[in-house]
Amino acid sequence: MSIHPDPKINRLNVLGEPLASCCFDPITGYFRNGFC
Image (cartoon, rainbow, N blue to C red):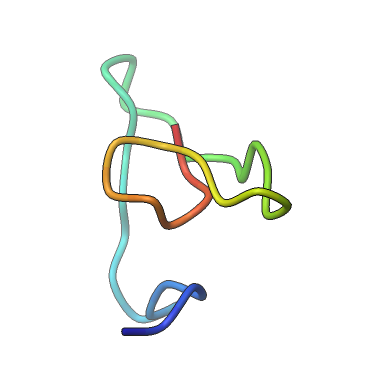
C-alpha cells in the first residue's frame, strides 16, 4: 500500500477541482491516503 497516490490518475472533489493533500502525519482521509 502506497501513501502517495498515482499522479496519472486525476482525482476530483465534488466541485470538479483536483484533490489537495490534507495531512500525511498521521495519514488521514477516507482511504487513509492523505486526501480528503
